View 1: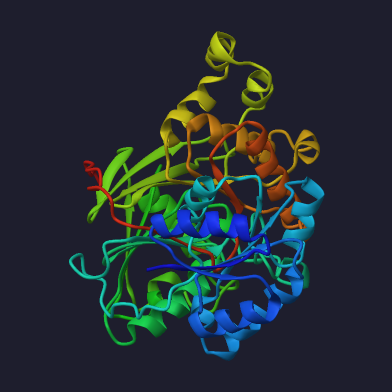
View 2: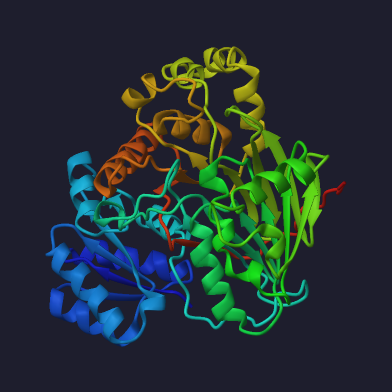
Length: 452
């Protein structure tokens, strides 16, 4: 049973929250002061800590993180949630002081329970399986971010919260492991896989959206590709067998890299996708060509825990936001019909996604100076996600010039947009190490498969 620690001096509100959360299957601890909260956090190591912003939030947040590290429980570091007035300035201050999420205290107890139930999990303390055969592992779906930056890797103190590595996302369903893109984040993923599986063989499927550098440059540094016991199958569109093979090989040729691709000891296969719907083990996959320079696709994975849509590089047309901004009822349907076909087809592709990972590189002012570059502003991304009925939006492909504070402000403004629209969508800026758990609730969709 998941545990939440509620730090709320208002006993009436605390009692209502406790009752509702318990009905939702949570084990609830409550505290009204700093010392009592820390004692409970140390003893029970809750998955979530919900704290009134008016309490000494920064002290509690910092102390709870220190407690987790001291107890050797960094793998179960709690999600820290600040609750306050709902004012935008306060949201930004809370997030900048270390909160993982911010919510308005005006939420009723039932809505609060629903919000907590929809939170992306950060880390779990369970030991991973040693093999990844199709019949092994847990039925839950795990999504983990290893690289969230766009264009070029940007390590440094200004990007430490969200991370500076470029695009790489890991998806696991039972024993299946699918990797989305091979940006610089794939190096750390590879190191983690080698540590996890030790001498056991690993079978990996790598889906490449396109071959811009920030999506392939990590592959030469991917340790599993150097182990002869491992199988890495790379998939892509439009001439992948030769085009993708050549692109990946050229970046490893002399004088750019000391080891050529054909010298990598791992069993590496490259497959050209000819259909937009196919199957990887138990996971159904669909692809969709998107508005980005060159050949670029987005992927949607259908798992027992729900669907995951990944569109890391896409320029959404502003007409969607501008046309739908003030329209409602019949006028809204007319406005949507006037939106370009590219956006309407992309909307249908991600319709009702449980997790939507979407290009949100700029703000609107920045985008005006970069129209045609192939990326979106977060204002368009939020409108797109809400119109598509996505349940969770992860703002992705952070601009290399955006420090953590800028990204936090953009995420806060995105949540405010959703709040004003009365949308239930959960919005978060993607960050390295963040993990989403989707418990198995349905059978995955089946798809055909055609390779050449």
